[in-house]
Length: 394
Image: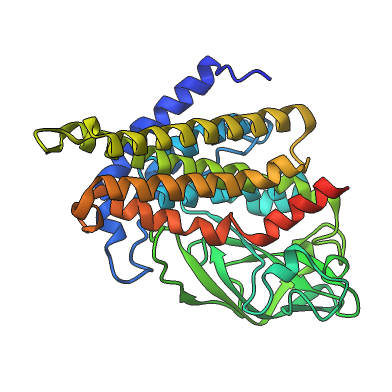
């Protein structure tokens, strides 16, 4: 596998690093400390990044976008997350679902939704799946019609009437378009009875509930979505009726593993850099603490895990390039679990290297450890590992 970066990749990487240092770093800590979770969000940074193409990075050139490949996207995430993982995720969340518009949508749908996505700096994308009583059941659905999504969509002539609630929805409250998964047949399991409908944020009957107040990644918005007799036309449907989950073409939005892993490794890189600088400059016992074996061993362990994590990430990206974006292997499925272990181990060691200062709000590593804690829910979960184990047993 060839991991060599092209000149275009290196230029993209440098652009992302410059943007992160010049625009994101000055606001990162301040936004994180705002008590109101809705107020942490800043449209100005989104507009500035959008001007550089960061919001629409995954739109192919043939459709008027930058056409950046998966490796380029991973490189951008590593650079942005090194400064602020939450802001990085706000941008990359759009890339995951761009293929719904570019590959699954028809020409008329692209005119209505892809065109404003390209032209409006504040047009964001979100996928509405998780519900209060239906999380893991959607990812490894049992053969039971009672499990999975309960949000319903009922056909009414040329329209669909949606009722229900979603929560933990990424970009919730700031997205302009929500790819909503709703049950259209409750007599069969969720994979055979779910339909995907595109719901614009200004649709009557659609509203935002609570914005979730997380321990980390606080800039990144997660919210409840409320559907009360929310009416959308059948013209907003993607794929066939009842194929919103079971259709293999859904695999085009398979960037989740690499996206989250790159974010975790970017955060871990920042933690290592802060810890290394502190260890070189902090003097205890008459010498810099990096000369103490306990600290030196921690730094060596952090570096080892980072190197292993990056190699694993690039291997999966290279494999995807060879085999297609919808391939699923145990290796790919376990990538997020490994990256989660890396970021949590590295940030924990960074806080310990800072000593008592490490847990203070004005220490740079304190925020990184809180951001790292988010990945326990997002990436290193038993469902993902069980799916990988099933593949190993096939």
